[in-house]
Image (cartoon, rainbow, N blue to C red; front, side, top):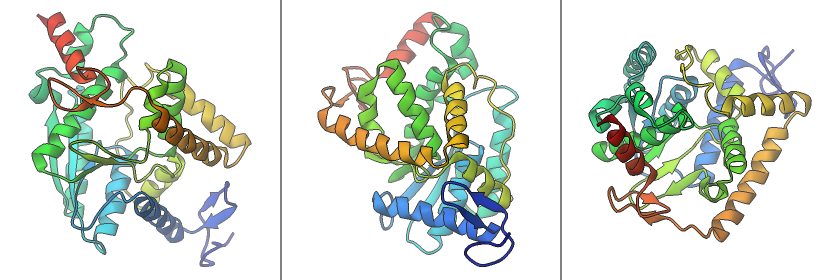
Length: 304
């Protein structure tokens, strides 16, 4: 089978579009689609310092690879930010992969740990949490976002880029819907601007399996070992459900993404819980005290 773009041997079949692509054309299509998303949403501006949240997984390392290519012809700088949650036997491998990959790209890299920032590792947090209804993913997600924000301020970046892909967006939408937290749907835009930091998701219109293939065809090393806590939440079940739908109905994820974005704008305009500023840390939230500060207070009370 020949590539539809250059007639070389095709190695990837994009079922939702009917395209067959060679390795080079496939990689170029990912870069082009990312660039289009960035341009459409004004994600990166001339002279920006972009802090890329790099965990060591396929999404964040592929994003760093794509942005590095783009930075060679555009005026912006990259800094990789890695968060160490303190998961023994898991994070060490990822940190080494990220360090080595950043060195090969010539990208500055900095890491920040939960222990240094919060005086608690994730494992210590799980040991002292009030009950197991508070999942490891919810604790980790809240602390990770705050740690990335801290790193971004410390490095004085203009914008934080994360590797969230189209599948991640759909999964988060369903989680918010099922949990009744519909106000958060209005905060799911691909690019957001807070009082202190812009945050962007350049991969938000790209399927997860395409990012996997991008990493594979570009020989990007990434951590293959999965987080030991990943199956505690509902996200894995939702991922499997959406993949099953896509297997039977090519392109349904793209259609759903378009619907979600229309709902995002509707909910945002009608959102009765306007964002406020946390009285303790100054970050945006819906109440007087943000979820991070509330969680840290509760955890430290349990610890003592």
